[in-house]
Image: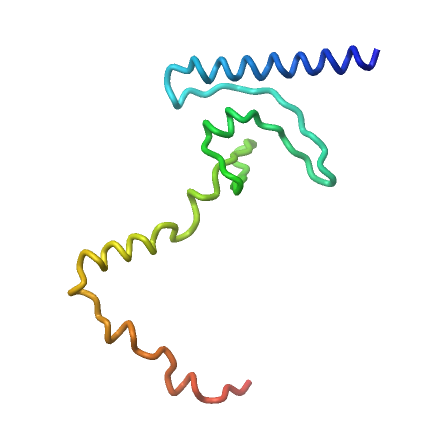
Length: 123
């Protein structure tokens, strides 16, 4: 009896995955939304939700994700998008290479320590 229930559950899961894949494949517009039902899965003291590979790919999720709760909804998005100052180094290098005459080398190479920094601090 337990094998029969397990098999039925596996068949239901596979049917759900096939339905999701068909929805993604037949999607008219890339921003179209669809709903997937799932269950919370116990992971030690945590709970998790299993996401189909196609959902992960469509959402552009990577290993690192940001999870937020807003208005009773859980929002999962790639953490790579909101890294503070992400891309700044490349942009600065690009601008400096395009405008080398504007670089104040003397200021950039000046020592950072001052006489104040060299004194012994007392508390």
